[in-house]
Amino acid sequence: SVFDVSVAPADALFGVLAAYRADPSPTKVDVSVGAYRDDNGKPWVLPVVRKVEAIISADPSVDHEYLPITGLPDFTAAAGKLVLGSDAAAISEDRVSSVQTISGTGANHLGALFLARHPPANKVGPTTVYISNPTWPNHKQIFSNVGIVLKEYPYFDPKTLGLDITGFLSTLESAEAGSIILLHACAHNPTGVDPTQDQWKQIAEVMIRKKLFPFFDCAYQGFASGDLDRDAWAVRYFLSLGLELLVCQSFAKNFGLYGERAGALHVVSSSKETSVAVKSQLAVLQRSEISNPPAYGARIVARVLNDPALFKEWTEDLKTMAGRIQVMRKVLYDKLIELKTPGSWNHIIDQIGMFSFTGLTPAQVAKITKDFHVYLTANGRISMAGLNSKNVEYFAKAVDSVVRT
Ligand code: PMP
Image (cartoon, rainbow, N blue to C red; front, side, top):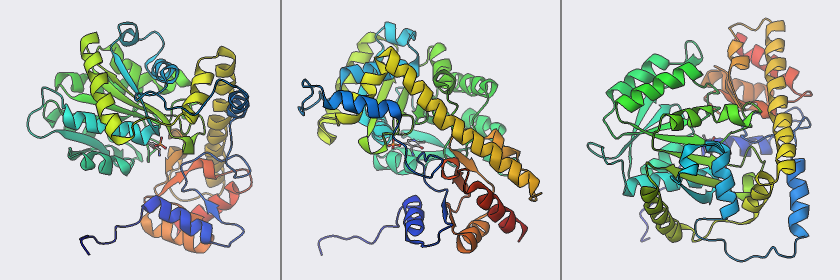
């Protein structure tokens, strides 16, 4: 063959999902998937999304023409306000370049590609990104695909099952000026461990002093805590310090629009002139990759974000999802305490968002899958959304059993 290729390893997460689907056991539990499930274990279309779908399909002015290269303007403008804050100085001063992307993945890619072409001007040496250890595995591929050097900062402390703030800060202290620092805006994937507001302040202080560039990945706004403003706090705090930064935004989880690929990239610059130039370069990159972003999901999001009554309904739907996940954390925690499962389980209720790093070892994960048909990735990460009132007790007993062996 003219192709010099070998078989690539299958995606770890989607491999677990395939094994779950193939398992005939009636008691099987899937806690691998990063998507919301209702209390019956089924995908959930948000009621506000159903409503807007009906409005759009009845609207004779909606057609299937191309969107502009940088996306639907009603969508990108409202999306920017949602994450940066509607009163953000960067918005009123026209310093934000917003582009609609192929969900959060596409935003990460376009952001990385842009920085590969136009790296921070103060960088020394090759363009470098620091990612948390661990992180969403796709971050590595996305940045290495565009030729950016990858380095890691310590993040998760296996001893406390919490944040290694000391390791995190000391790595930032030693990072070269102009390095890109990838930060999860809220609900860190895969650990569920977020910095406190005080820790964010410490992180920002070092980043300013060391002239590091903030690259925020925001995939869970409103879905993490049920409160849109609280989940955007870190991004807005960095903005309030007058920093130039970049935000990747996904509407997969908070709108349940996984397959529609609705997302945005927002690049905040120090001046309107720079911002115009940045947007023009983003448009050039976007043109060569996808020409025009997909319309359907962006239309749904735009209608909701731009209509106060629909927006309010959306916040109720967010509370439904975030609330159910929080209840599952508490119920799981209570069951493990009741079973007197060895170890400390406070992290189950302390962690934030859909994911929890249980602390189960790879051997315990293998055993829980083999003996109990419970599916999760080898790093011990579970999605709380896979638990419900029917399976949580079974799951707790399975954890209890493998922890004791
Ligand atoms: N970043 C992080 C940290 C994520 O967890 C996800 C979703 N798994 C994404 C980005 C992007 O997801 P999507 O492309 O579906 O918006």
